[in-house]
Length: 72
Image (tube, rainbow, N blue to C red; front, side, top):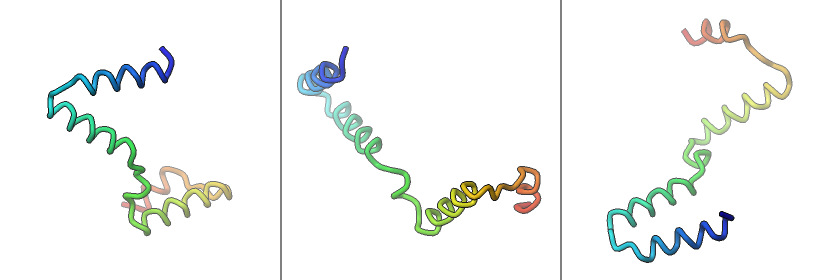
């Protein structure tokens, strides 16, 4: 089944369904799927991730063992 047919089938199921709980759970699922975890991070968390990616891009890697020593 192609994507358009699947969408139409889902739409038909939703329109024919009178179960409020089902519709509410479906709406919550869709909203959750639309949200991007990046936007839920604080600015400092985003900066740390960007810093880590930049370090990896510049071959600044740390062994797992030395990382464990650093955080313990």
